[in-house]
Image: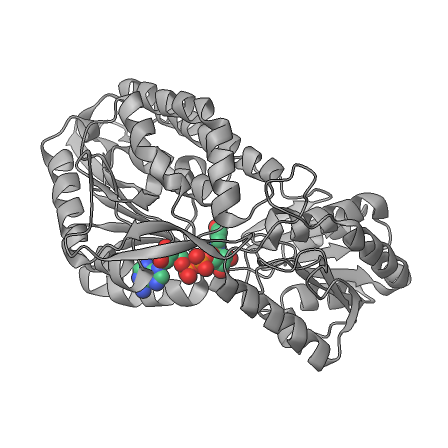
Amino acid sequence: MNLQHYIGGEHVPSVSGATFTALEPATNEEYLTVSAGQAEDIEAAVAAARKAFTEGPWPKMPAQQRAGVLRKIADAIEKRDDEIASLECRDTGLPITQARGQAHRAAQNFRFFADVITTLGEDVYRVASAQLNYVIRKPIGVAGLITPWNTPFMLETWKLAPALAAGCPVILKPAEWSPLSASLLPAIMEEAGVPAGVFNIVHGIGEEAGAALVAHPDVPIISFTGETTTGQIIMRNAADNLKTLSMELGGKSPLIVFDDADLDRALDAAVFGVFSLNGERCTASSRVLVQDTVYEEFVQRFAERASRVKVGAPDDPATELGALVHPEHYARVMEYVQIGIDEGARLVAGGSRPDSLPVGNFLSATVFADVSPKMRIFQEEIFGPVVCVTPFSTEEEALELANDTRYGLAAYLWTNNLRRTHRLAQQIESGMLWVNSQNVRDLRTPFGGVKASGLGREGGKHSIDVYTESHIVHVAT
Ligand code: NAD
């Protein structure tokens, strides 16, 4: 199979003819050749998108009409539900049952932002007998969207939907390890009636195609999801052109369990939080902090549940943990397992490749207990099915441990103490906190992180803020 760029409504190869190959995580065999975009391909995509912005109907279209197109995109995605799920399963190694949920959420992203733009008002400020001041939201211009390899289709649509809803033409640069499901988007956009030039894809390596998009002066906004270190490079490279940046970065999110919590439900959430989506989830609860009074019981039950997580072929509906995305990433995750052992953490589940799966990037659900905050496995994002469990005795200690990393994306709190909940909610350093709940999203709420987990918020009207400029008009009355 051969994937090309999609620029100005046409499928085109790279100007240079360069390509790269993608591997199938379950076998590590090459199965896809992809055009490798360079600066000249980004130049062509920016020219097409810029034309759509300055001359085309999209930015000027009434919100109702644009929302109609977005709803058609959602319909076209839903029609391809099974196809999206099976491409994503093959491309990323996600279990097929979980890939299906991602396709559903992708359609929901478009329907949701169709509703947002048709219900969003603009602000008016009145100074009695003097002035009427009102805000006009304008699409910011050509949006550069750079996305990671985990749950690629869902994360691509999480940016595409609000950018298009706001009236911006877009250039999507999918991740090089999982470019396949994005190849369905051109047909979906055409079927829904998105004008040529409004939606563009340039595939390629981050340091080439991604960097060229970040450096281009006619792309005033970069919305990026990926690693913190990449985010830092992008910020530096975007500085010359003073771009708007939305940065959704890494995480090392704590799940805190007090002894008054419903332990069964907390255990379910802990298993789901770090082993679903292969543990390749930015909001994974990869550090579990447990009160010492229930610690040993929790560790034993957690280890037992982890050892029951079924690792297997991604396309088998019985599989709960599939293949990690790429041999390079697999090697990195396996290195962290060794680091955990060398640091003296107690390995209570997993830690190796299941004997029944000799090829591909498979790792059993892995639990380390007695992890101290000084250990690298406590501090660094592993981004795989590996979790650290750490005991605490007091609320103060729990808080200190929760905040003791450079990240601050999500946090999860399990307690039935109301006052403690509100006390901790005000002090935990994270963009998002779930209390007595696993990660359930409400798309209207601000999504994003603090500290090294990101800058800015997306979700609901916050996303529209990212892709628009507010223009204030002062009228004397
Ligand atoms: P990555 O940073 O390696 O790559 C992300 C994207 O950036 C890819 O498309 C890549 O090609 C591109 N890129 C790389 N170098 C670039 C450069 N110099 N200029 C421009 N683009 C460049 O991240 P990844 O390994 O694909 O994804 C995993 C990471 O993403 C994890 O850290 C995870 O926590 C994070 N993530 C965060 C969220 C969130 O919402 N906060 C969601 C999902 C994933």
